[in-house]
Length: 481
Ligand SMILES: [Zn+2]
Image 1 (cartoon, rainbow, N blue to C red):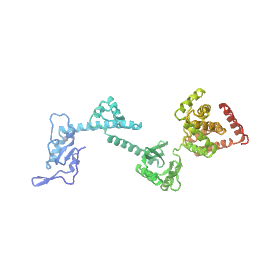
Image 2 (image 1 turned 90 degrees about the vertical axis):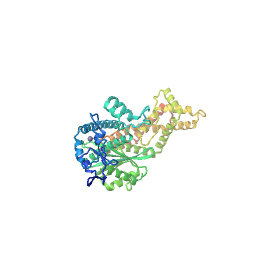
Image 3 (image 1 turned 60 degrees about the vertical axis):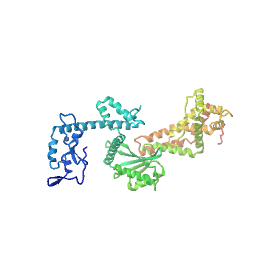
Image 4 (image 1 turned 45 degrees about the horizontal axis):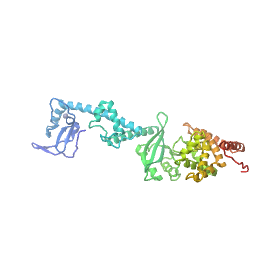
């Protein structure tokens, strides 16, 4: 836009007996004018910048210095109505329209890359570069199909500067945040969800809200990340949360629930973040678990903890972990595949156990159960002294996997997923209610309790014996144990 310097005093020049100067009120009356401080003169912004071919060029207000403060109004009125100025005004209007159109397209391209999670910049964006980064390459591609866009892209107003890219994205993000805030304000209550995650050397706090939209559907929306590396205690996280919801403009809206993981910093009942939030929002019930649907996650935590307490079970899972480590050593893996192949077993991988991904754990049990024959044969070969460097480990594992404890656990834990799956699915149903969840949990517990009677155990034991026979392990029955 025009340079309209608003000064407290403009230099005075004498006109006869009077001293006169430029007046800032002229900016209001003639929005197209510019005031040059070094020249102490008025110019026409439109004629200077948007002059296009005309029969003659009127250079008053473009090159000629006009400082006639006595007759300035008269001169500007005349200028505002002259043909050259009117042409320039039209040209300006068209340029603005074209630039807006171009900015709209550029923003669309930027949003496309952002939505797809693609990096905008290239490591080398110079003209000789083979690849100038996603954004520039996309612009060039787009230019092939759009002549007007191509012209602008190669002009001075092309919006490809890094700072402009960031500014456009921040503006878009602000608009999205504003929209979410409006929805939350309209419905009048919401739930806050937060979790910490590591990104390179930073601890990032992710903040989301959950609310009912105007369409009566539940929406879960991500608000922002906040670097909380400096203050990871309850006070630090609390003030981060507080500050963010204030910035977004929803701090006055009643909070009805807050959802975090079980870390004591978040969940602590006297000093945790949830308590601090409740001091301001007494209705904000704390719900443990990062995903509201993920009641199944809690079920998994219960199972994993239970397995840790039982000595036989925890021993079993450490052997499983050792097996995984052993078979992921270079050299062993291929051999293991070969043995599976020669025994006609469908090759199955063992994966590392993890506390949070319970599904891997059960999948591993099932993988081990169906490949135990191959595992034993493989360990047998490698446990011969001197056959390889890890023969001691191999013979130790060989001994362990043939024990009755291990075989029994393998059969029992392989049976578990089918039992848990029903519960797990029922708990994750989007429309699950407290009463339906209670029913499922109670009946699961009953089923499990019933498995502990003699009749059920006999059935399990029969399975164990059958399985041991199949894989060629002899089990000496020790009835009294
Ligand atoms: Zn003009």
